Length: 159
Image (cartoon, rainbow, N blue to C red; front, top):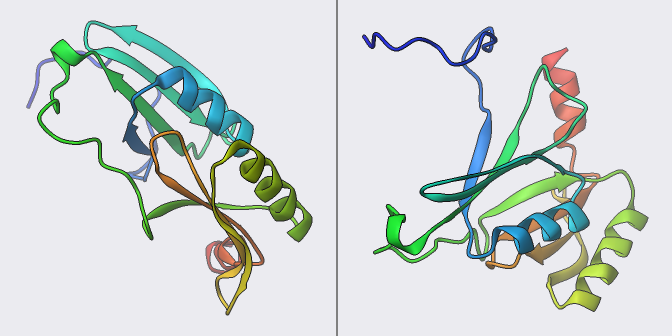
C-alpha cells in the first residue's frame, strides 16, 4: 500500500467506468471536432512535460461522469512513440444516442460538408436503429444513433 496522500477529497462511492482515452495527433483540432460534432464539451485542458491532455464530457452529470480523454504526447516524451496511433475503426466506435432522426440527418450533412462522413444515415435492424458514422481527425469512428434503445433499456433495467 502506498503512503501517498490523496490529491482529491471526493471519490466515487463504488468502482465505475469513468473514461475512454484516445491518443491524438492534434489536440486542438480534436477538441474542435468533438465539440462541433458531438454533444460533449471541453471540461479541462492541461499541458505538462509529456504533452497535452483534454477531458471532454457532458456537463450535466457530475454524479456519474463519463469522460473522453484526449492525449497528444510530445514526440520526445511519448511513451508510445514506437507504436502507431491506434484508431477505433472500421467497426470499433464510440456511440452517441441522439434525440431524433432529424438530428442524425443534420449531423450527417455537417459531416459530409466537412469530409468526415464515413457512413450516411442508414436504418438498421433492431436494436441498432437509425445511424450514421462520422470520423474524427485521427480516423476514430463515432456512431450517432437514434432509436437504438441503449438509453431506454438502461432506464428500464437500472431504475
